[in-house]
Amino acid sequence: MNLPLPPYGRNAVPLSGKQLYVVTEEVVNPRSDTMVLPEYTDPKGFWWPVKGCDVAVIGKLSKELALSISQALRRDQATSIVLIDPDTGRASFWPHSLIPRG
Image (cartoon, rainbow, N blue to C red):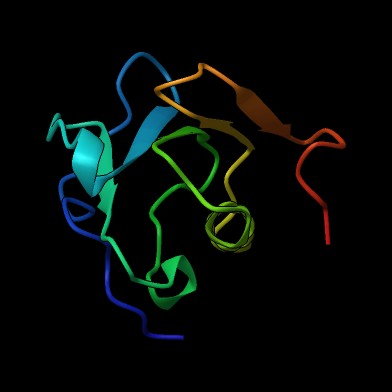
């Protein structure tokens, strides 16, 4: 499967161990450990270089987008995922029951 990297994906380097971040465009902070999820784009259309990493996804995500990004990150072998709403601080985690495994 030859998928393109997400914005800033080519330079994404886990800092402090195995942590990487994915942010939506309204939260962009292009650090070396951060990739961007472009607005109105299916996350499954990218290859996310997250193998063996713990990934925090920060942004206002619809239920459909949250499910899609979590599926894409699992497909690309993220160790764990946390989805964080920057306005409310609400978080959902995988592996746990809050994000479906299948």
